[in-house]
Amino acid sequence: MDSLYKSIILKNYRHPQNFGRLKNPDKTVQANNEHCGDRITLDVKLKNGRLKDIRFWSQGCAISVASASILTQAVKGKTTAEIFRLNKNFVLKKLGIKLSPNRLKCALLPLEAIQKALC
Image 1 (tube, rainbow, N blue to C red):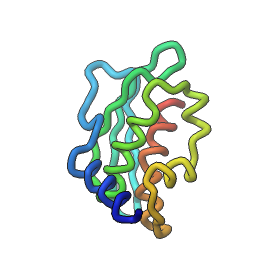
Image 2: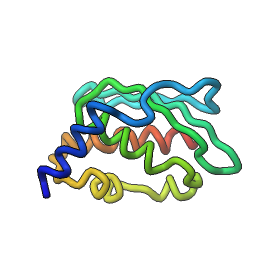
Image 3: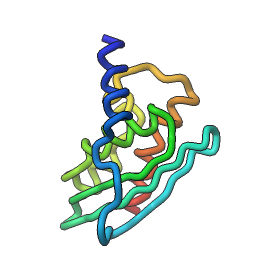
């Protein structure tokens, strides 16, 4: 099972979904992981209280980029209230692997940025 999840992370790292920039986003935010240097920029478009579209630009490790790819897919179409309810457990379930405390910060950086974009 572990190798299946590792392959999912590698696939999303090598071929991330929603990677790039949006034309005319409603909001653009940046988030940084001071411990390892990972950085993410998010562009979002909202419509009627829902996340209509999202794109990210990132410089970071495989965990951070894969997490951004997986999370941006998971949040499209959700309401802002639904997105604010997402937490560490949601991210860990999506990634499917155990992470050290330092790697956990990498995995949670995209969620932090997504929630920051909706404030």
